[in-house]
Image (cartoon, rainbow, N blue to C red):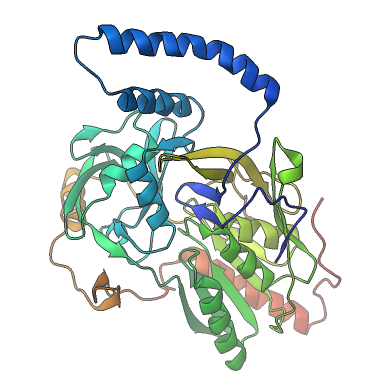
Length: 446
């Protein structure tokens, strides 16, 4: 899954998750003409800076003024471009390592409102019942309207064991709900699997972390030993993660040389293309991929690649639509700049950003009824951080970690999308047995 036709300007690793997709680099190109024009306009900025420093009623440090101006500049662009002071930049670097203190919630800004992409499975947000699409309208009583994404992330973070109260507005609820969560060190086991019977094997990927591809490979080896004849890959409520893991996962199901994903920005010679490299020996099982509105970024890369190459049937509801590339640039004083520099595209050339992946077969989950007052009270109690069963712990470096409540891998009786996926795979097997299934090499649509 090597990247091809890329410049050395792209260095480090790429992260496709909470804040879309990150590229760490040491510098960027500058347009000479644009810089000359900018220098002329900077005269106004330096004039204002001098006036404030000389005449404002209180003395203000120049660092605060300059940082504030830069922050405002980036806020005029998009929710994912931001200036990070040194302390914020250090926190962001810790986040990309996969272990961090927080709530386990992926967020974005949608229609100027802080919105949940998805909770990470097994984390405080997930156990509390936070759902994709929930709008966070307050954090500790402070309204989030027009709050920047970086500011929101910082407010949601805090020392392990501390509490934070968020106010959410959910579709189907008439009134906001206050939810108090306890921050934890987040370390996620991202792959779980189960035999469903009739030769169908189910694999759930909840996020794309450093070990996701290795854990998935182990699950597929178990599936092969079990005599599996069909596969379900569940990417629902998977908010993303590391891009290289999305590429490696896609590689497991595609033929060598097939395009997986590519990026495209204003500087054409710095675009990236990732292709499948390995023939890993796994059978070409008939395959269904489950997605929904909580499937974002890295999970959309996998779904888009498998859909374009007609390798799997995509089933569920339209994905979130998060497909922009952020370049992270360290600055000389220890601060950092995160700048949206490109978008990523499926093999067919579809931009995911803002549109998402439309399933081949749309299956809506049962719609919740509008809550009554009593139901809202019961829901609020359920969301409260009351005593919950704590069955399993994933250890961190201090011997403690995320406490995961009791949960089955699947709930086949209630999961209508999973039921439909099984029906499709059984029908495919019948067609193959009768010699009626279409033959031929998979090719990208269009």
